[in-house]
Amino acid sequence: MKRHNYKNLKIWNLGIEIVDDVFNLISEFPKDEKFGLNSQISRCSISIPSNIAEGSSRTDKSFSHFIDVALGSSFELETQLIIAFNRKYITIEKLTKIQEKIEEFQKMTMSFQNKL
Image (tube, rainbow, N blue to C red; front, top):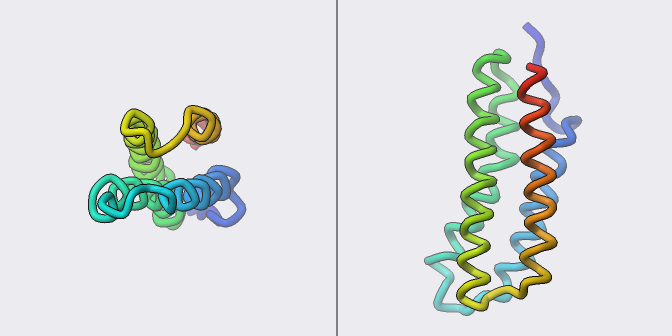
């Protein structure tokens, strides 16, 4: 059975970049969001590369499920960032920049998944 080295996967590396970007964004959120939107955004961003890493040790069929979870987290993250923008916690420029990275992740991940 073939195993994937998650550290060599472009989708995992892009997921790590997204986590770093997200943590930079949420560091500017109001303090009263620490246990609300801030916490939710950080958890779902971390879920993206974490699920890729966890699934990489499984069969391709099982790995595909973990990739589905990572993709779901990326769509959840995008939604939460739109909410943060609507709450005026982030600017349109910051939202657009992270959305572009998330959309790139989604395209790359779907393509990778189709090749499994």
